[in-house]
Amino acid sequence: MGAAPAKFAWLDGKFVRWEDAKIHIRSECVIRGIGVFEGLRGYWNEKQKQMYVFRSRDHYKRLAGSMRIIRMPLPYGTEVIEQAMLDLIKRNKLREDIHIRANVYIGEGSDHTHDPAKMFVGSFVTALPRPAKKTVRTGTHATVSSWRRIDDQAMPPRAKVTGNYVNSRLAQVQAGLDGYDTAIMLDQSGKVSETAGACVVIVRDGKVYTPSVTNSILEGITRDTLIRIFQDDLGLPVVERSIDRSELYMADEMFECGSGHEISPIVSIDRMQIGDGGPGPITRAIQEKYLSAVRGKLKKYRRWLTPVY
Image (cartoon, one colour):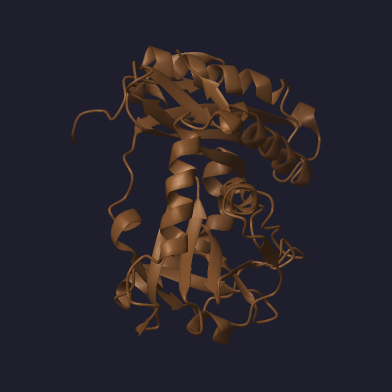
């Protein structure tokens, strides 16, 4: 076992050493995947000597929404977890780009109980160094998965539930075994939904399209960010609508976007080249604007940033 990736984590109200951050094996989150989470990004601005957490308040608002959907009564507000996140970053002395996980989980208790007195609901936060993936520059190769995206009538995709990501794993593992970097999943109606872990955006004839929030997608915060930047900075309105599989093959540019993936170009799909086989000009333009915004370089978007130090 290598060195711990961080000195401390935050677990149920206190800071603990990384090796002591443990949950019991009989916890509902372990045996049934009952928990919700958020993945956030923190960006280090070397010139300002400041760490900015991007759209923190919106992430914790979505966390509260996920808790509501699956009826998880946390005995304290998400602002407690948000403050713990900021304190954890400082305690770990992180001064580089990071990825943060904020989880709320059901611990030991009666099976599937709705009674708060009969279950323990806890939370934890981790923050680890995480530079951008190489594929942000080079692009990824995708396939349309045979695995369909979960449906709102079965496991609501707009709730960021731990167990939902078994669905993503099935698609991602199959894509990897078949020689692809990522998988694009279709919803139960056969329309484009999202990749195994991010939202999908396509560019065709100078217009930008992305699946609707009713196409079994997570209501992505990065997706929302890009829609605003496209319109306000690049003068390109984004059309949110159902997208057919065959439209993917006609795209001039395509990318997936999310807090973890950032903006990752998709340069081929089902071994058919997209555009000229590299990140396109509109993708590059939105990447530049986005990365400037998250690092505090654009004054108009500083309202989205929470400084740590």
